[in-house]
Amino acid sequence: MATNERRTAAAVSRTPEAEGALKELFISEMKDIYWAELHLVKALPKMVDSATAIELKHVINNHLTQTKNHVIRLERAFESIGEKAEAVKCEAMAGLLKEAEQLVDETKKGTEVRDVAIISAAQKVEHYEIATYGTLKSIAATLGFTDAETIFSATLEEEKGADAMLSLVAENCINEGALLE
Ligand SMILES: [Fe+2]
Image 1 (cartoon, helix red, strand yellow):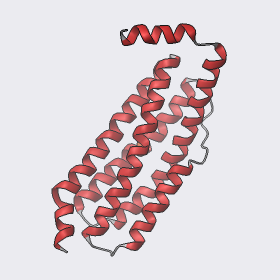
Image 2: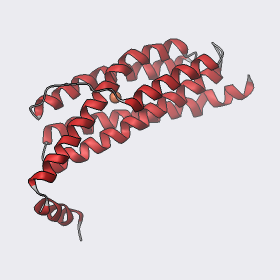
Image 3: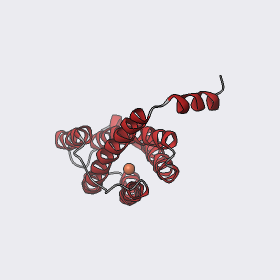
């Protein structure tokens, strides 16, 4: 069966209760990632300060600018579905940011090993965000929230881009340097 036909079949059989439950999950995921983005705006400058390689500082700083925009986009997405923007603590992101701080504490200032640790922590954050925005995008499509779908699609691409840039920095300069220390 073609994907479109399968989607249509699913849409036909979905009850109002199931649609309501899906919308509830959608809003709950939005509140979770809203908290995460708000906290990333505070955490990313600390990662920039702790990093040594100029390329790494640049990539994280660039993503900080994008992250501030992700917050604004989420507020627009809430508005587009008639909901008030609200943040609910994201335990996963809280844990990832705590781990990031620990990794910095456990490594020496000015070393490439610390940079590798920062990249590792930042990529774990990005992967969490990629998973969340992927889910949000697909639920938005299912529920017919086209504005939200467009918003989450744009953010998802930026998170993937940030992840790819971090991999590039790691592969190009840091991993080799860490071995030479
Ligand atoms: Fe983000």
